[in-house]
Amino acid sequence: MVLARYGDSVSQQDTKLLGESITMPFSGKIAKSRFLKAALTERMSSWDQHDPSKRGVPHERLIKLYEEWGKGDWGIISTGNVMVHPEHLEAAGNAILYAPHETPERIERFRNIAAAGKAHGSLMVMQLSHAGRQVPLFVNAHPVGASDIQLAHSMGKDYGKPRTLTVKEIKEIVEQFAYAAEIAHRTG
Image 1 (cartoon, rainbow, N blue to C red):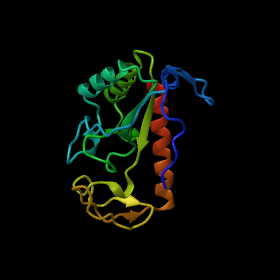
Image 2: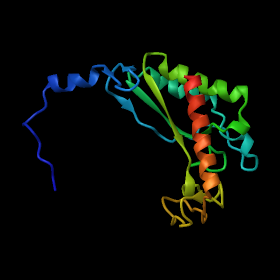
Image 3: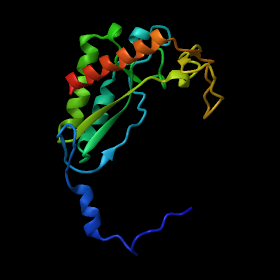
């Protein structure tokens, strides 16, 4: 089914709406335009195959990337994946906020990303993630998930057979999301 178009053309008046600010109803925050930089997977943070505590520290080039996006007149900039556990990543090089591995340096890098993206008036939203069963095999051969159903080979990636999460583990993941959200708020 194809949706019908309304009218024969789009006027410049119609497109001006995109450049107008918009107030978020819940927070009252104002986005300077209606353009949103969608979340991407940047893979520009530290990676160590053997030591999960060394994973996920944003590199300086990631901060520079958000600095450039910040100059782009976006109303809202959504970050790429910021994972809540160092062993359950969407990809090697994901940024990570995980309480047992936090350091002042790591927190400062997230603060720098927020400052860079917001320097020209954009709002920023951090995309918090847990890959569940979608962890590439080379990152974690024993992922966890809502079920034990393994993903098939897809887009050049293989995935391990997941283990079903326990209720206790689900609660731990909820706590990890809460912690990461609190750090996201504190860092800007």
